[in-house]
Each structure stands twice: as structure tokens, then as C-alpha cells.
Image (cartoon, rainbow, N blue to C red; front, side, top):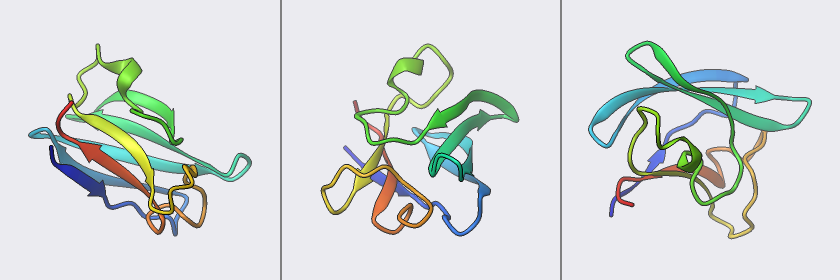
Amino acid sequence: MTIYNIPVQNNIDANNLSVSLSGDIYELAFRFNSNESKWYMDVIKNLNVILSGIKLVSSNDLLAQFKAYDIPFGRLFIFDKNGLFSDPDGSNFGESVFLRYDDKL
């Protein structure tokens, strides 16, 4: 089992990054909804949007319900280093609350 922190930016309301997950390159597009104080994510592969509008909340696996799609086989989840199970917001995302990927199920 290898767990990766995905480097996110919380200082701008929308940003993209390319990341290797389970040997494939994905683009993750993040946007912050200030009305809800929540982050959302899209998963893109080969310029095709595979998943759109995934709300980033503390859960076991953000991708579990989408396993029929062309997504990484591992587990993508929110981790709060303070143990509070906080959702990422406008100030804690990438600071104390992280997006992590576990490449083994």
C-alpha cells in the first residue's frame, strides 16, 4: 500500500493539476464554491472529462460509486491530520486537510 498526498492549492478558486494515479496520467480540476464553502473536483483523462462535480467531503472513498468508469483503481479520500474528519474549505485544504490516493484496495 502506497499513499500519496495530492498537492492542491487553496489560494485560488480554480486550479488544475496532472497526477499519475495507478500508472495513468489524470488531470484533476478543482474549483471552490464560496456559497457552500466546499471544493469540487473533476477527473479528466486524455482531455475527456470522466467525472464532474465530485464534492470533496470526508469519506472512505470519493470514487467508490464510480468504479464502472475509466478511473484509477485505488482509493481517493480526504484526510484531516487533526483527526477531526473536517471537509476541505477555503483555508484548510492542503494545510491540515489533504486529498490522498491509496493505490491498493
